[in-house]
Image 1: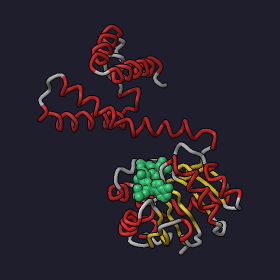
Image 2: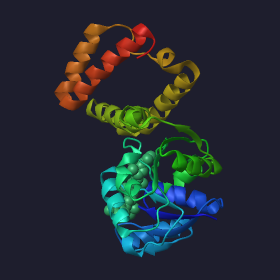
Image 3: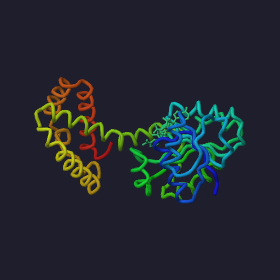
Length: 272
Ligand SMILES: NC(=O)c1ccc[n+]([C@@H]2O[C@H](COP(=O)([O-])OP(=O)(O)OC[C@H]3O[C@@H](n4cnc5c(N)ncnc54)[C@H](OP(=O)(O)O)[C@@H]3O)[C@@H](O)[C@H]2O)c1
């Protein structure tokens, strides 16, 4: 089996490492994080690999996944390039940043790529279960993409390629589709509590409204599922409600007004 080194063994590193290891696609070899304890925890979750304590102790590997937070990717690539390992394939998992974050490795003869799996990796244990069927956006050097696509397909991903220049807007779409949902729900629940809804009703409200919204979206699409005052063109109510929300929380009020304008456009034009 080809070998995989992990720099970063958090939610994404653990999940992909375990999927590749247990499905016999890649042999997880060395795992480097910020501490021996977290590297050991990643190795335990993956069920293979050796915790490492510095870049210098990482052995040569066929593939390197740099699954650190986005702001750490460039520095990790720089450190790996300085360590002078034999060039192979290096990729990061960011949706917003291009493969070019790994430029120091490319300059040293490596093939570089980014591979963004469009899934909320809330915990590695849930992500391992949810992963099959996940779409994965690949971008970078042709040879790296040719090597990575079968590796991702083998664990159930649907791969597609993306131009480097469009990654920020592409990733913003994923933020709207998944990251903002918990924010919207938290805002709704805070408003309900603040306006006197009994706290014990919240779990039921959460369940019924989320299921209702998801069912309608899946059946009717965004424009067909849209309801509410902005969709009905009730601009006076939207304005008063925006002011009431802003009086409670200025940022929530601004979000209410901006989203209401998008809702009105979606209702009017059937699309954004
Ligand atoms: N979470 C998601 O839903 C998701 C989805 C798609 C893509 N991504 C992308 O996946 C990448 C990783 O995100 P994540 O959610 O897995 O992050 P995470 O859970 O915060 O894990 C980050 C990992 O990187 C390690 N780390 C941080 N700085 C490091 C350094 N300088 N050297 C070595 N290891 C370092 C951390 O070590 P410790 O364990 O010691 O803290 C941790 O293991 C990011 O590029 C992110 O944009 C995330």
